[in-house]
Image (cartoon, rainbow, N blue to C red; front, side, top):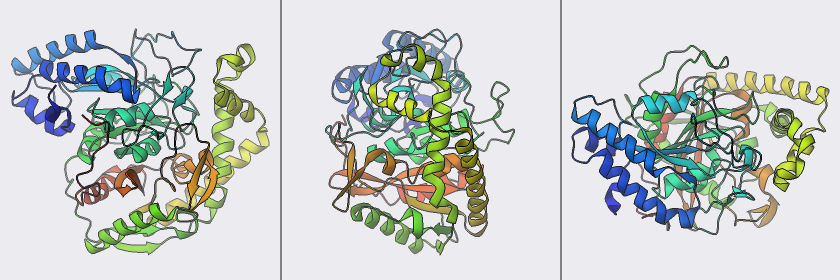
Length: 470
C-alpha cells in the first residue's frame, strides 16, 4: 500500500496521472487495498465495487495512453453517498425498504463524473433516507469519525465525510437538506460545499425534502471542491429546479487574496450559545482574515429567530409526504429515530407549512439585504464538538443540550434561502476538527471558495492527522 499516494488531493493526483507518473490502475488497486483495511474501522462504505472499478481504471489508462485525457477526474477513484443513483446498481438510501432498489439510470451528477472519467469504488454509508445527523444506522451500522472512532462523523453524509477524511476516497458528493454536507465535513475536518439551490442537478438523487435538498462536493481541499463543482454544476432539463446560469471555472482565481473582502458577522444568532472552544477558533480565524485585509462588519437578520421552526416545519412536512405511503404500509421497517420524525411530520397542518414559507420568504429578503452590504457572512458551522456515538445530547459550555436541534441551527438557514454555504477546517480542539462556515450570494460560489482558500493557506490543522488515516 502506497500511503503517500493515498494522501494526495484530487488535483495533485490528476497531475501525476496526466503526466503518466502513476496509472489509474495503480492508483485504483492501491486505494481498493486500503479500503478493505480502513472500512473495518470507519464503516464508511456500504458497498465496495472493486471489479467494476478496476475495469474502469483499465479503460481510463487506455484512454490516457492514447492521448485522450479528459481532465482532473480522469482515472481518479471516488465513491458517492448511497442516495445518488448508479444505473443498474443497488442504491439503498441506507434503508431496509430500499435495500434492493436498482435504479434504471444514473443520477445526472453520476453521469457527469462518469463522463469526466472518474473511477467509482463504491457507495458510501449515510443516515437512513438522509434524515439524521449521527450516521448511526440500524441497518448498516454506525460510521466512525476518523479523528476519534468513538465520535460521530456527523450526518447525514457521514460516510462521505469519514471516507474523505480517512483517505478511502479521493473526494465525494453529499446531499444537504439542513446541513448534511456541512455537518459531517465540519466534524471530519474536510471542505464541504452546499451550492446555490439550482446550481447542481438533483435528478436521480432520492429526495428528503424537495425544496430544501442540494447536492455538493465533500473534499480534502478547497481546490478539489472547486474542481468538483465545475464538473457537476449546470442546467439540467431533467431537473426543473436547476437554473440556466453559466458555470464558472471555479479553480481559476483561487489565490486566497481577501484584501477588501467585506465579512458580515451576525452576533445575535450565529454566535449565540456557541461552545467557547469553538467560538475562540472561529473568532481567531476571522481576526486572521482581518490581518490579510478583510473588513468585518455587523449585519442584522431579525427573521433568523424563526429559522429553526421554519426549517423543521418545511423539512418534516415534505419528508413525511415523500414517505407517507411506506409509513402506512410498513412503518416497522424504518429505523426508530426516522419513524419518529416521519410521524412528527404528519402533525404539521397546511397552515403551519404555509406560514413557514412566509417566514422563509422574509429570511430570503433579509439575507439579500445583509449580503448587499457585505460579500460573505461567516459563522461557526457547528456550535459544539462532535459527541460520542449514541449520545442524543451535546455539550455547550458545560450544559447538555439536544443534539439535532443544535446541529442544524447554523446550517439550516442556507437551505431555507437556497444561498451557497461552505465549511472549511478552522482548527482543532481536544483533537477534534472545528469548521468555519461561509455564506454568500446566490451563484457566488467563487467568492466562498476563495475565502476558504485564504483560511486553508493558514494551515489551521497544522500537521495533525486523523487517527484512522493511513
